[in-house]
Length: 218
Image (tube, rainbow, N blue to C red):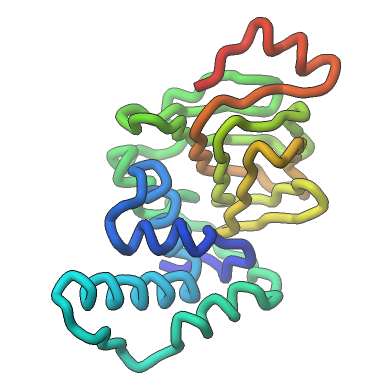
């Protein structure tokens, strides 16, 4: 079920790797969850799958009637209207995440305290990636930090501001070693988000550097 029209997306490499089956398990979960919100990315993945199948069988790609791959990615770069308000649903989580959680309700999960206003559930069996679900109260912000690898965040509910951009339900925020950022949940809605991270996270700033002495991240 489509909850909204996403305005921020995985990049082309993420979608192509997902379509070909070469994507890592954690990012595959994030992309699959994003696709439940985003018809534009679903169309792009279908095009990539058609090209991959043609290469595998040595045939000319056959594509279904619909937008071309170029049109799909042109649409990704265009501003989208603000997502409509969604009526209450049984779960704030898309089906791919619910399946990983064995369809447990969010209130049944083993939430761990990380900092005031922020709880986390870590997912097991994602080798080489830190995959987790966050529940964050409005007004809560992370300390400034950067990354040795890549961090991908899929917003499920609520709104997150990061580096001057606002991310809403279905949006994907990407960060790497080039980013020194401080995400913060805004608005008045509880924020659930899926995090997929490779490499370690390193806090920056006076307080953050002190925390690095006592905090080990995957």
